[in-house]
Length: 249
Length: 330
Ligand SMILES: Cc1cc2nc3c(=O)[nH]c(=O)nc-3n(C[C@H](O)[C@H](O)[C@H](O)COP(=O)(O)OP(=O)(O)OC[C@H]3O[C@@H](n4cnc5c(N)ncnc54)[C@H](O)[C@@H]3O)c2cc1C
Ligand SMILES: Nc1ncnc2c1ncn2[C@@H]1O[C@H](COP(=O)(O)O)[C@@H](O)[C@H]1O
Image (cartoon, rainbow over all chains, first blue to last red; front, side):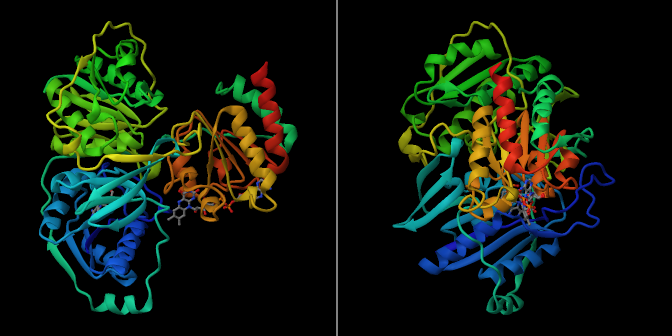
């Protein structure tokens, strides 16, 4: 099986995010980066599929040159090849999807895996858009994935805690959610391999269009709260405040 | 492109959902500001029955896609339907609620229309004659104001937008599509039901969440979690959890609130035995009112809580349940 995993370099979840000087992007000072959380489930899913069915896993990212660090982590974890579409721009999911889809078209692929949502842009859109551009079936928010007989059996989380079961003919696109698997850590042989595996870097061809960010603002501050009291005796007073002051019950 | 707004109104067993009606309310107000009309679009089995009623919730016109093609959910079928109708009505904005279905098909619909998508928006406005959306990014650590090239495709966060009340007489029109079930790429084959009647944290109006402070439900924390469920039951709330609790296997993944869990925006959020790590806060500070119960008066959760009780979950949670039942009864 030829598997492509699209991963995104994103600020770590403990990063403090402040709008930058241009008022449109965040201030990168003091921000650390990592593979966007859910993409780790996509990497693990790809490696498990390779272990079961044979083949090759290619990780693909669109981002600044520094993204080679995240791509090497993916190799160290068990992926085989890496490609980086180099761009420092702040691209939305639609323009990103077009650049990724153009690259994916040039690579053999039975399955293209994504995270269901990025932890920074949070569009939960790139996978579906790539699927549309490639004319492929797509299932999002997968918590179950098996491949047999040229099709992927996917279980996805739907409303009200329901799980929807789908069968997708290969090639297909699947976006991954927590619960699908337990991502492994990079291992020693992987780390050695990562040192030797080149990351193919090409300038990204990102078209214009999509959704543009006009402004980035800090969230409105929450007014200072109050400690109603200590222990169970405070319960009555709290409930009273919720009814008469906050008027939420 | 005209000034019209197309709203996909999410239905469940043929009935419009609360989140769907909220999206319609938002679409109604946006259309007014743009000087256009709000078109409601419903799809699925049995949606015809309630379709005309959408005139009472902000729709100026209602379109109905019934029939086999939309009987079972498919990402590409719903995406093609929405993109087709958006074009047909000349929509300047195309809206759906950011429910699991909306988040699934709207990006694909936008891609068909060669547009971007603004996901999980919390505000819509018209500036310079154009529809703009505000959406939390970095799990609410910042708010982005965005504008689309072409139509604005947007999904709207549940419980943020108010429903509209109108008295529009509408005659639902059937929608024709040039494809059938056989043309669809991936159709949902089977639905494994979650716990019956269980509220999703992302959609609930009240969320009661537990953290590590409640301890292991298979051990000394058994009564704490039962008490939390009772509190939730009293309030008609969904139960949420911190990641620590989910990772320990104490609660299901679907209940995790936070940056890598669900983002919630209920009118009341109760955090019991949760410290208030930045990733947890990221998922719940959009709540209208936050209540925290923690034995440590220095816990960071108190910095974002509107009301706090310093105390042990063991006795504060049951006391709250009793106080709520009393006030809700009377
Ligand atoms: C990449 C990444 C993503 C993450 N995403 C999320 C996320 O989406 N959501 C999330 O929640 N976390 C997330 N986390 C984890 C987060 O950093 C915290 O570890 C987690 O939120 C802590 O959970 P907790 O508050 O339940 O536990 P703890 O931090 O252990 O806090 C327990 C609290 O309970 C109180 N307590 C103890 N006993 C009692 C008692 N008897 N009565 C009352 N109070 C008591 C304590 O004072 C303490 O404040 C993420 C972490 C990482 C690295
Ligand atoms: N710049 C990027 N490079 C590679 N993959 C990406 C990029 N941005 C988003 N993705 C993928 O698309 C998924 C969803 O991202 P988003 O649509 O931003 O929520 C991510 O989890 C990644 O798998």
